[in-house]
Image (cartoon, rainbow, N blue to C red; front, side, top):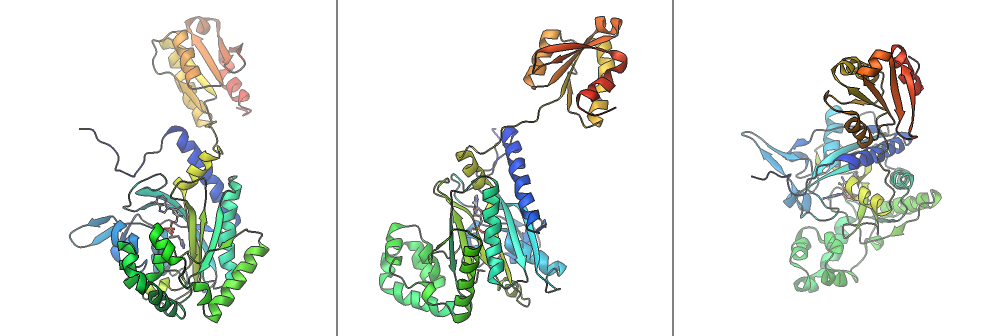
Length: 423
Ligand code: HAM
C-alpha cells in the first residue's frame, strides 16, 4: 500500500524549509517593530467557536470545516484564526483593561476546499489582531503593517483594495436594497447566488461567475448606503492611508468571505499569483465578541497566507538559496583516528560549531573527501595512523583547495581559532 500525505496538505523539506524560516523571521521582525505580541492557540477548538460567530452561511462554516467527533463533543480543526483568537481573548480577559492591545499569530489553518495552486487544505497564516481601538487610524495601521511585511520581502506587485461593509445600523437597509435589485434577475443568477440571495445577498457581489458579475455591475453600491458614522469612519480611514503613502483603490465589491466584519474591509491581491490571487485580507470586526455573548469591544485585523506569499516570492526569484553548510568535516582514516576524532566532533558541536564526521571507520581518503564535498564543508580534517604517529594532522580548505599541517596536541584550539572562537 502506498501511503501518501492527505490531499492538499504538504510536507516541507530541504531548501524550502530554509526559505520559509528566512521569510518567517523577517515577518516576525516587522510584527515586533509594530508592537505586536505573539499568541498561540490550539489546533482543535469546540465547534461553537466558529459556528454562529464566523457566520453559519459562510463557505467556511457551511462546508469547509474538518470535524473531530468524540463521544461527548464535536471539535473542529481551526479553519481561521480570528474566532480562535477571540475565544482566547475572552477566556483570558485580555480585553478587560479597555486599553488597545496588539497580537499576532502564525498557525496552520484547515479548510476542506478544492485544492489548486495557492489553495490548500492545510495552509499557514500569519495574522494580526488589534483590540480595544475603534479608530480608523487603527484600521490604517493594519494595512500599513501588511504593506510593510510585503515591502520588507521585496514584493510590491499587489493592489490594496478597500471597502466599508457598513454596520448593524446601515447594513440591513442596504441588504434590502440589494434584494430588491437582484429579485428580477434571480433566475439568471448561478445556483449558489440564488441561495445567497435569501441568506446573504451581499455575497452575490463577490461571485466570480461572469453571468453574476455582469448583473452585479448595476447593483446599488454600499458606498451610497453607509450611515453617517460609517461614512465618517471610512473617509478618515482613506485619509490615514493617504498620509501613510499607501496606494489603495476603493472597491465596493469587496464583501469578504466571513460574516463578522463591520466597516473597514480590505484585500491585497497580486498578479504574481494565479486564480487564487488574494495575498492577504482582513478588516474590522467590532461585533464578533457579541456573537460570543459578550459585551462588544472594537477589534480589527488581517490574515496573510504563507503559501501564497512563497509563490509570489518564488515568482519574483526573491527567495534565498540555502546558505548554511558545515564548517568542518572530520575524516577519520581507521579505528584509532576515529576514537580521537569522535569526542572532538562532539566538543565542537557543543561549542556551537557545525561539524560533520563519518561514523564509518572503514572508508578510504577518496570516499571521505567526496563526503566532505557533498555536504559542502568549508574545511576537512584528515587523520590516519600515519598522522597519529607523526602527531601532525592535515586541514584542507575545501573552498581554496589549500592545506596545512596542524599539531594534534593543539587541534581543538586551532579548529576553534579558525571559526574566530577562542578555546
Ligand atoms: P481569509 O481572507 O479567509 O481571512 O484568509 C486570509 C488569507 O489566507 C487569504 O488572503 C489567503 O492569502 C490565505 N488563504 C485563505 N484560504 C487559503 C487556502 N485554502 N490555501 C492557502 N491560503 C489561503 C481570514 O482568515 C481572517 N481570519 C483574516 C482576519 C484576521 N480578519 C480579521 N482578522
